[in-house]
Image (cartoon, rainbow, N blue to C red; front, side, top):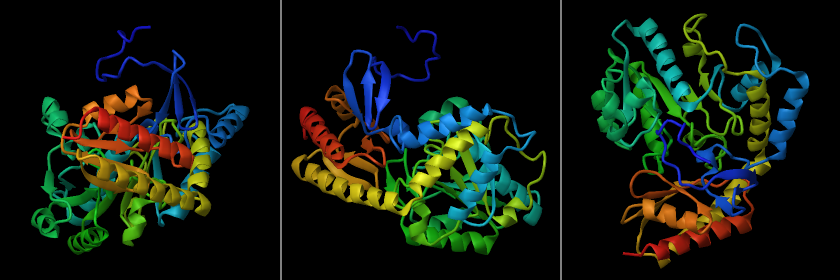
Length: 393
């Protein structure tokens, strides 16, 4: 089988996957791989999760997969209420991806800021190491020059601050010109870097003082990945806009924005739209996912797995000089190396473990949130074998 007809924006290995079950993928040659990528944090419940299967079957029984947002359907309205109940008071906008959720956040923030502060209040402040998406707005706020440069000029008006440095934020947040500050509570593509909770509190204070919206991008770190339902919870800070996606609909394409009442009040019919966002099928599945991951016992299980992973990764760091640092929270982990990550990713795959990178020198681990402990241990052992095979210098 050939992939010649696919546009060459990806460079996957030759392995062709045909089946998935739990934390495992099976290739067309029958070989099984333990998946510590989870579809880049999408498959939070693993493959063929019974909760997702039941939700899909229930939706199919109604015959409603899509109606468009010209008409009301029950699943989207119920999901919006449920998201507000577990986040903060406000309104919800549904879309199809994380990048679209980020774009919507920028539009909603500008809509509010200009209504409150005048036509010049349009700027966005982002952080070094950030990744928010590949569209012209979210890419402009993404600190990856290799991704940005072929497509410049991008959206203007983005200023940069340093992570965990309040002074750098104060220097670029302009009460007359800045609409929003956007930050990942745990940076993903930027190297799996948790943001200090105290810094998030200082951001909240700066934004409040200067009339600026605070956007939390939890597209990768949200919905149970850190052991809390949302990564921002440990800071005690509530954002004005919260961007969600990846695991929300269990592998079906869905993004969402939760907007606080003062922002939601400035958005009206015609200000933004999407054909597919919040369709009955994806919303039905998302309700099942949210109910599962929001359960107290489920989140306790994530924290238990996190502690087990802590032990295993600490052992790898002791045994392998190539490991420079351990990063992350919950089941969103990074091994920073003294050398490139790509050979380790390849060696792990050759040993039946799927991992990915987060920048040039960080191996990223994103196992399913419900992975059995023995499979978590197996993944750590295989990662150790991959580190040994690629050398410890």
